[in-house]
Length: 98
Image (spheres, rainbow, N blue to C red):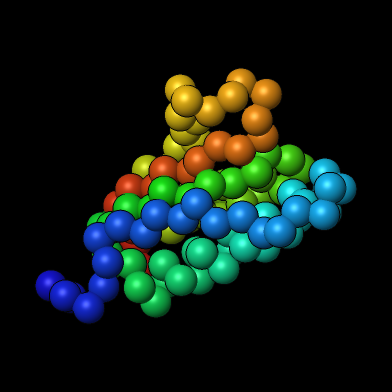
């Protein structure tokens, strides 16, 4: 057992938005890939990730890439989130070290 790695990575990170939907989306996706890189170094095998994402054209590619790293990956939207909000979360469980 590796006591130097986390059981859970929880990211509510978002870039500073510039007000241009596509640019904001792509900057958020880039940040999400950085979070996944953080997991590679810091999340234990079998661990979980909860990561805020911004819906848009690159969302499915991010989902497909993240799915390769977890036994189970799903999209979740908290009940408290406004319906029109483009923010949702990816919940990954069963991290598979690469």
